[in-house]
Image (cartoon, rainbow, N blue to C red):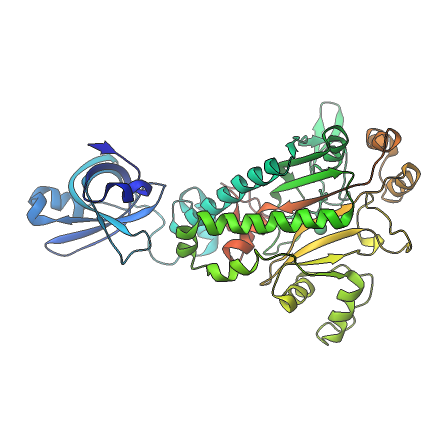
Length: 433
Ligand code: 4AD
Ligand code: MG
């Protein structure tokens, strides 16, 4: 007899198999018990009938406790009433590990309690579905960029530079020098693009953001492609193609998980159709002002969650907002050829209230311009000499962007809060577990 995983059940209908499982819930009458089982690959039901297994085993099944681990042996049947579609009729149970007073019970728990038990909470259905979708999006990311001819160049985590500004840096000691935890791999990817043409990084990034919102993590994962000989317009095409590919990957490979999350696949289908709309920052300001919902909103401000939500909801699609004011963007962005108040950049705003999922730009190519901007940003030129070398030796037009993985997961899975899109979230007041 074969030992299998639950996810393989459909290949074994009407056959005897053995599966290592944990108990997630149960109910029983005098004659029959229904055990809700999981093994980390899927969730399904085990049915155990007293007249088939005898008094002793039936009693053992009825007395099983939440998250006890054991092997079940039995026959797989179709079960059209469940999301999964199959169940097991149990003929034997072998206990493996005890579990006494499992803290997460089927009743409702508060978020703080669940967060304190994140190491156990990960076992529950909703968390399972989100993490499986996260995994699919990571898989699709590698497939997409490999197919498009990118190579992965890993950026360092310990750095001496601050690409996105100095206010949100995690400071640390590097022997007798100062160092920071990376807040973006971009500058290193620019060096990579000059060496390998099309590159991407995928790694953890750190921001000491004091904001406690549904969209901010202190530690998050970012995918940062960078492309040589590429202007903004072509970069936007790569961005929308990539996002549509992520959504399509989830639709193709995560139907079970979408069902567990009650996420309507038809809503996601809409996001696979390209192109996404593009509006300028100037137009966005006009739209927001005309709506009458943002009194006092003036050209020059950065958008917050309400503005981003309004703009993307207007289109009911992801929307690119182009060319923000220079004063609110980082030093490395390419200045506009005919206006000195905006830069060549774009944010991609997700619909349904999720806001910015991508930030990107064409990069400045002029050494003197960059030196000036580095000074203006309060950074030390000496720390950026290597970056300036990229302009000194064969500077070319180049563009890149960063997609926040957890922001994209939160949107695609339709969650309320970003904290459930990463296995162990780091939040303003949380570093446990
Ligand atoms: O817009 P950001 O700050 O852009 C950069 O870091 C560029 N260097 C990227 C590049 O051009 N290579 O961040 C990029 C994305 C945001 O659009 C957002 O999705 C995500 O990273 N992000 C966060 N996600 C979770 N928590 C936070 N605190 C985040 N800050 C940014
Ligand atoms: Mg941004």
